[in-house]
Image 1 (cartoon, rainbow, N blue to C red):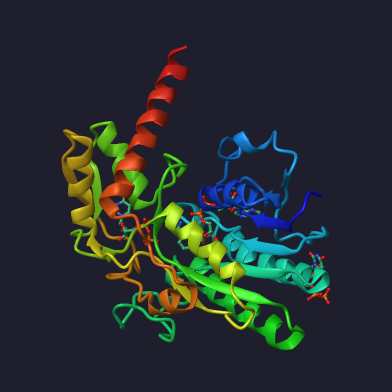
Image 2: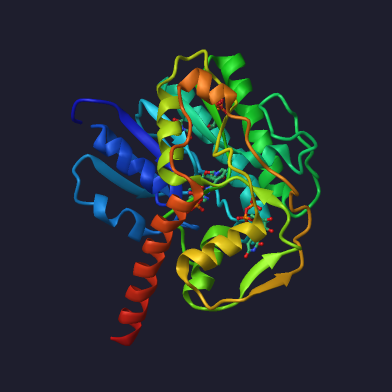
Length: 322
Ligand code: NAD
Ligand code: UDP
Ligand code: UDP
């Protein structure tokens, strides 16, 4: 083990996890990536595999894991509605049993542990923008509940392990984050729209597209997570991390068409059940406590993400051709 800390990232081959592993390695840590490849990919970490300070293991966090670590980032959980609703029972198990195992590991090793929670704990919010004291409006029996309630229960477990056993916790409530390395079939809105636009296929806006989201570029988000892990123990959170810029889904579609120069038309599809009508983080606490706020605008972030998907889609075409 060289110099610094032994840091574990569960969900480390996923979209956010792979960027996090990369940043932690750059900062001189030994990084252990733990993932069952449910939505993650070896391609996301392939460039790290030759680094002697990086290790990846295939493991499902619903099963106990005995390793020695100093810090744990718990990101394991499919994040796209399409994927977390594919096997809802497994999603609940990942959130709840996964959290119990990661917290048990943190308790035994006295590691600090950070939970990747979500703006979804606010459900379809009656308070706008959402601040951390708002307790949310979640349908406990709907198709999104496996994720929303799973994440809410994980927060409960984090605070109970903290109060009952003195485990050092940090809970981040992450708002919609996008960027390179999202899987072309991820199913979330930014990757869907970009892939559709680049293929000149219809852009699928769900509902009438007036529902809003706030989109954070991945680099900004990862910076927030690392700052939160480094914050004093008293800063347990929960703390919102997201970009307060708020856009209608329809506006996002128009921006993607403009930036890609696409011939795509917008088509309207049914709004999924319990789809939140509005979402925008109040990041006062993150600004004050972490000195953090996003730097990359939606337009800049989309340009970077579009460049990535242009590359991925052309590489896919080339490999299919030969
Ligand atoms: P992702 O689907 O790309 O990554 C999730 C990773 O977790 C994948 O590599 C997957 O294989 C792994 N995983 C799933 N179940 C597992 C299990 N049982 N055991 C081990 N590994 C498992 O999603 P992402 O966008 O990178 O999200 C990472 C985390 O951040 C998730 O916990 C998600 O809920 C949270 N989050 C993300 C966003 C966002 O907009 N990206 C917003 C809020 C919260
Ligand atoms: N656990 C784990 N790795 C460890 C320590 C614990 O995976 O290094 C698991 C353990 O199997 C248990 C869970 O974490 O199911 C919760 O641990 P805790 O110590 O809280 O519970 P207990 O073992 O007392 O049931
Ligand atoms: N959405 C859409 N078209 C798509 C995918 C998603 O209009 O092809 C909408 C979706 O209904 C939601 C918003 O975009 O209102 C964000 O969806 P996403 O799945 O990215 O995240 P979440 O709903 O979890 O915020």
